[in-house]
Length: 85
Image (cartoon, rainbow, N blue to C red):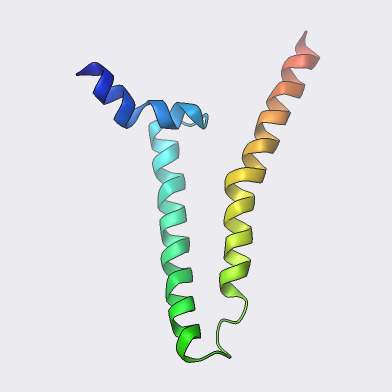
């Protein structure tokens, strides 16, 4: 039972170096951003002149937030540890 609990609630947040609540906040942010972007893309499908760059801008923003910032955080922590030695 503990293994199932750990797999569902602990392992993934740990793998991205977040607490459960930090991960919840990040996931909710992404949820809101993607809902907004989905709506903008839906409108764009019917009115091509509306929200012309919203989807691509948001994909870039979310990628930067999820991947690039995580890589910077890991690099910063490694540099800090190297300096402490």
